Image (tube, rainbow, N blue to C red; front, side, top):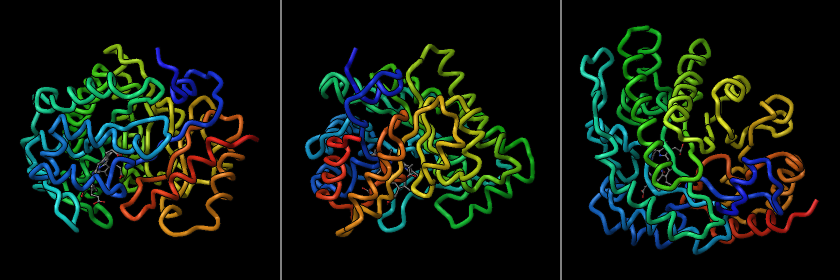
Length: 343
Ligand code: CP3
């Protein structure tokens, strides 16, 4: 097997320094990203082009001494496969045909693995061509977050349509979540079998779940996804990322079945140590905004994270994706501090 620090942390083995990688590391903060992206007609096309997936996944490895590569794709590939006409509009973000709550037809029986074969092929190429000490990360969106986009049709301030659909307690919303669970399991299983070493589930709109429904839509779908993966003999670690879920992180960490929890940048790590399930790995949680301008507190803030997580099972990361404004030199500096850290 590989000698990879991220896998070692999951396996409770000692590591010489804290492993590090960055959410959205393969994106617009790297200049070459734009020339790779311009080779496809649109963003979905890009996500379905094996060669371009391979190139963009490897891009951050050229710049950074990091311990993981996250495969280039998008969580919205599932709504695309469900024929929601997903498009990425410059300056707006993702848009798609909104589903009307109570819409009778939820697409079941989609052969998702067949529709996203390029991702499967890319992972196979990547696993055999990136160094063994770099973990390959596969991912999917959590059912709640995918349902949010599918019901609203785009990002909104408060996801009111989705929350209304939940409170109306109709079977329709549960059916949508159930089909999403199936597709997420399929897509994660495919990525694991193609060579992913770790899987991550992004629940970017977890903070929109009413607390009354937290167990039903924040915890239960992830729990089902993980137990279905285990039944299919996918045994690799799963990291959950319920973004800004606050106090709900506690029961998520004990009940969802995740092996690792990614924390957003608002979480106090001392609070996390006291409250989060001590048997899981913590990933995070530097604010990506700290990497934009010249920042005199960068050194101090990175070391504070390392000091707090010292002797704990920890993967260094940002608390949300890098933005296009993040500076390569700041990111390099963070990596250097983490790699040279001695307590
Ligand atoms: O580098 C990586 O992390 C791997 C690839 C990756 C992308 N999206 C590529 C991407 C990953 C892991 C994602 C996850 C994703 N996608 C999430 C969960 C994480 C989060 O940010 O909360 C979400 C909510 C999405 C949906 C999505 N995709 C949005 C809202 C947007 C627009 C955001 C923006 O900043 O414009 C995207 C587009 C997208 N996905 C880009 C990239 C590199 C930018 C596309 C471009 O214009 O080139």
